[in-house]
Image (cartoon, rainbow, N blue to C red; front, side):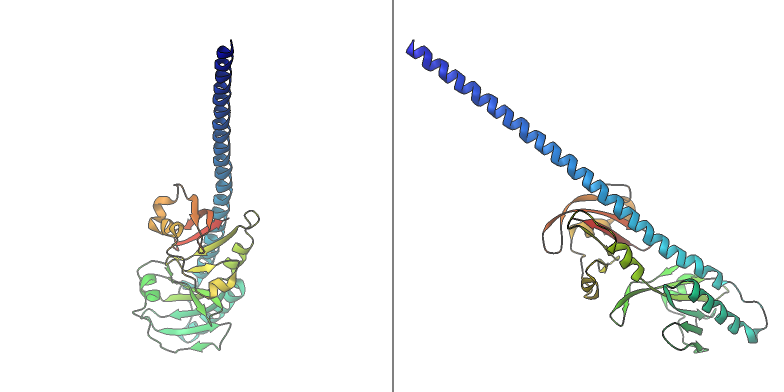
Length: 271
């Protein structure tokens, strides 16, 4: 009887152990799937925010281009008054588009005939030769020129946008202030410590809640999520663009991105 009792006790202990292990495995599996569901939901929200920001920035640039479009049309009237009329048109555009800081007119030969600026005196007939510059050659070939981001006086981001009116027409060149993009990024919140940022086609940071990082021209090209975004922007547009990655300080982050195809920029939302 004692031996049977001991054997029975062992069976009870074994069954109890098996049940405990089964419950533990079940709990672990449940926790794992719950974590995956929560992560997927969070990444989905972050991706939606990235897409919305990318769309807003894209619309901002396209609106600048649309407003510039009418200035590329031929100016009617006597040749002696055409430049005066073009100057009036440029001044009107500066009032309508606060982000444009400077406008230049390059004649069909690529020489600058007019420059109107918010920050400097207007210049007429400088004759500066830009005939071999991309900002002239691209519009003459029927394409919109969108230059790389640069910093004026190392304090504010700018880009050059240029449009042409046709093979026999001149080119309008605009210097566009990109501080608007800073405003878009600063308004995006993701959790308690999340944030958004924008990198250009080279992987250089151009918008971030911490402006000092932008002014330092921080290079994020080595981050895996940035490499993924730049590897094939067109191919990943409808693919999985949310994942677990690392930030510039090697901390794990949940990151989602959206590309701005015409510019080659990418918007990231991380936490």
